[in-house]
Length: 316
Image 1 (spheres, rainbow, N blue to C red):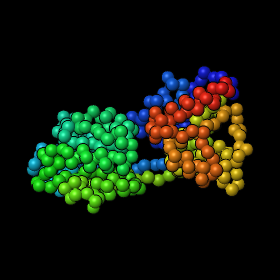
Image 2: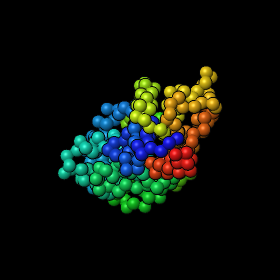
Image 3: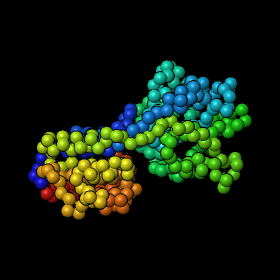
Image 4: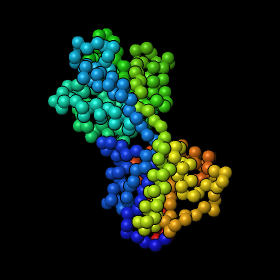
């Protein structure tokens, strides 16, 4: 592989997060990478759930200082474990009259997040609410954190009309139940349990156009003269189409051990973590070049940089 000063294409097999995406930030041009987002899954917000969330918000369901609001329609905090949930919440916040936002979403309302991506998206809204839990990294750890944190808050924040307020959990139709099970476990003392109200705010389906979009991106990168490209995989969805487009599968759907790039451009594959890596190995017999130690923009970036430093650049 010969040296090149052009930006290295990075195909991120995910929907670009709004209002901010950490992968866009870290792979920006000054790092000599050119990121492109290729959605594998299509996320659709449920209009009925959005309407309900706006009604709860504008009706002071999160403002515990308003004692006139029915406790049955009130919540002591909100849980976010996906970027899609953050985007749904963002649409509600942006629809509010700016002068009333801090009143409806006060600084006493904790916003619990599972990692830096969800935290970053919420912070971009400029709310006074504390955004906490990002260091936990997974649902089980976040649940343990909330049990400690929420139960330490003063009753003026967590109790209304003699009722301990539950937490609102904005979810997709497919999710793990570790958080509600942990917060409402029968192993806990009754006074330590925290109610969880789950609302399915979005639905997910595979993008019908992914195969076409991915093939087009490959062709464009070849035409640009790029000599290497990286494909970052975030979930099992899209893995087969990716390998197929690259020409790396045999007739039985397994990875061809003698597969080579059909152009002068070399393709490398990175995964967000061990689940997707193991899926590629088990289902297709393909071992990706790197897997992030931490499932974050920084983790992916570090994995790619380390690999290029020790493997790719030695060939330049």
